[in-house]
Amino acid sequence: MAASQLRIAMLSVHSCPVGNLGAKDTGGMSVYVREIARELGKQGLLVDIYTRVHDPKDEQILELGQNARLIHLRAGEDEDMHKLAVYCYLPHFACNLESFRKHKDLQYDLVFTHYWLSGWVGNSLQRWWNIPHVTMFHTLGAVKNAIGIGEDEPELRIETERHLARNCHHTIATTEKEKEALILHYGASPERISVIPCGVNLALFQPMDKQMAKRQLGFGDDKIILFVGRIEPLKGIDQLLRAMTYLQNSQGLRLVIIGGDKHSQYEMERLQKLSRELHIGGSVTFRGLIKHEELPYFYSAADVCVIPSYYESFGLVALESMACGTPVVATNVGDLKSIIHQGETGYVVMDNAPHHLAEKIALLLSKPSPDMKSVLSIRESVTGFSWSNIAQAIIKECRLVLTNYFVQVH
Image 1: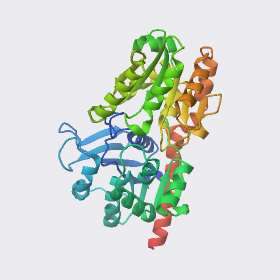
Image 2: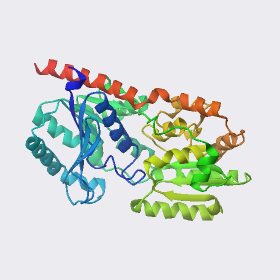
Image 3: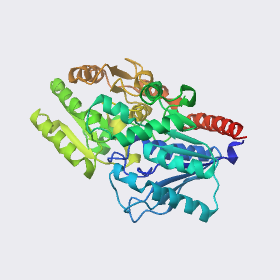
Image 4: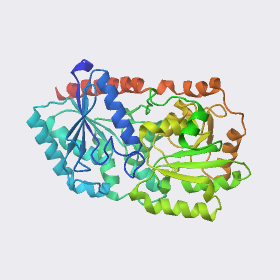
């Protein structure tokens, strides 16, 4: 089956791919869905992403690029809601999607779902349409519960993920760790799991002059330590704040934290209080949400980007930072151990203990300002993660799944 013939129904029910990045339910998965859809469209597939209406002003159909569009459907109130509350409206979402499909006379070859809520809907569509269902989890509830940081994930999620892992025609994991977790926690069949990493937009995330970027952002000559992500306990930001106390001898040092919205207000206030208690409040800046297109300025202005997480499904921020030529210090989560070249493009630490983070941050800060050669060397290390390469791997898997499905059916 030629790629140009493939039409994919992609589902991201609870999280809008064009929502505010860094908000409670809008993170790396939203970037993934948007970017992979655009790239699949460029490579000749026809991709419709379905998500729920989050705001009355949402356009029903939004063109994302060549052959790729985003479609908003009603499911509950036309506003943000807790993702668990979305579960009650999944049958409504599925029926509205089917009505839209019939009204527009659309046919799909494959349904590709993201996160367990979308997977639930995908199961219904697979049966109605008699086409294969491919899923990605992005994070796993069982792994989160095993870590024990933040709120426990409900049994409803665990059971739904177990059912999807065992019954979907194929699962795409972004790391070998995730594949192992799917087998261990959910009894998934290894032969029905492919490992394909996340990608990075190399056209957007490019190095720029560090001093120029700092001036643009009003940072002056401070050394910048950067955090980018959602503001939640699992991200380990409190450990990064504690690490700052080991670095106080460094003059002109500033920690810049990007992310957070009204839903993370409690955690934001907790972290702000902690920074005051640690007597580093004057050296910490909470910038809140910023536009995705502005991130390259922050990565380029930073002297080091830190990922102190207890858990990441992949570690997309590392790719973005390194694409801008900025080294990364990270815990051993996601696929960061294979992405970061120890001592060359950053460091992976055994855990997010403050002294471990601080030791490696200090090592990077003590080095002379990087020249363009070293900046480009860091960028070069992640060029293989272009969305074009990732899309080609996804297309290959979709073709295999379709071939196997029709062989079984017929």
